[in-house]
Amino acid sequence: MLHKDNPDYRGDQNDPFGEDFFLLPSEEEIRARAEQILGDNRDYLRFYVEQAIWYAQDNPDLVKVMLSLLWLWEAIDPKWLAEASFMTVSDVRNLTESQPVMTFNCLDCGTELADKSRLQGIGMQHSLEDYCGDKTKNTPPVNLLCGPCHQQRKDNAEQQADLDRQRHQALLAEYRGRPYEDRRQWVCPVSTDSLPLGHSTSSQSNLFVL
Image 1 (cartoon, rainbow, N blue to C red):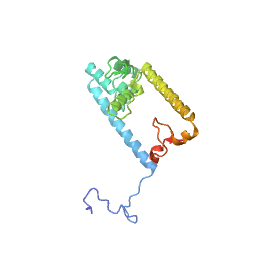
Image 2: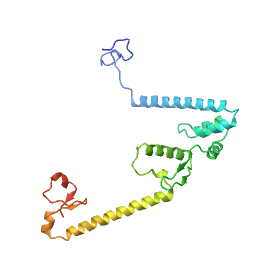
Image 3: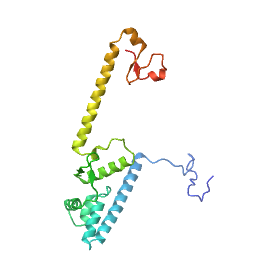
Image 4: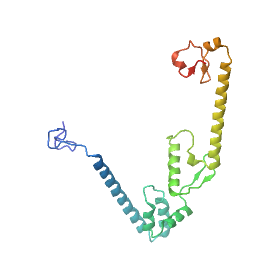
């Protein structure tokens, strides 16, 4: 049992008849708390971003480096950077595009990919990290492929699907052409295996008699 001096001690909070009984707050109250925390954190972040840029004002080159780095921080509003550096958002964007911190290439052909917006660049970085961290399927993310390579992969997938359909139709035609007695002894596979009806039930889950 926890002592009263223990920070985890909750007294009579678990006693429904006690004065300190703990009730879960309403959904509205929880959301209000979350929004308050989010707002406070954004205010703190903005304060330190502005402080960092202001302290670097005497060194224009350092300001450019900081703007290029902070531009890639998703939680930072570009307006903060513009106001702290006495620039417009367009000026900050042009500056960061003139000296990009990160570049991306098509994973198929190696062609450099152009990020048309700040969020697109951040998204490609997230996709690259997820792909390298085995958080996605084996197929490269679409935003890490150039247009022609993405189309080529799409065409290949459609061609493979068409070949699979033709192969399945040929199997069906072959089995339907057999005498009825033969068809009773064999099952037409949805897979490539042909198993007799006497095979175990568990292995026939994807098989059917024509």
